[in-house]
Length: 141
Image (cartoon, rainbow, N blue to C red; front, side):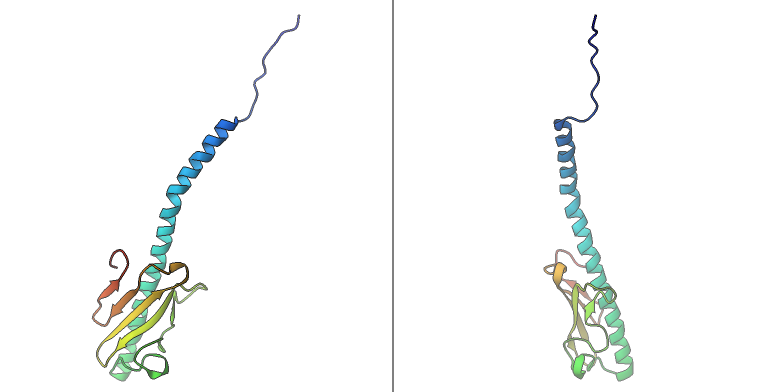
């Protein structure tokens, strides 16, 4: 007499694998935009920090010259700074902001960080000598 014992098969069915792939896809679709948003915010904070450091360099320039004028490349009042790096972040290889002096008088200045590369389209950051911070993106600093 031959007994017919059914042996249990091990493994996953195609439907089970498709469900797992679908779940992973849904999680990725939710997580990736949030991750990308956080990366953009981190780069923006680097730009803000660079503007604050550049403002400190402007104050040092003022202390030595009794004027904010002449801090740009070539001794000018606007353009790329001569007293600070012209890209941010200051350390690291990939730069996401161009730093410029938008305006400088004897007693006031306006600094700008313009996004570029992967950060392009995020909005211009500005900082002036009174400490007013501007960002023409979704929200303020």
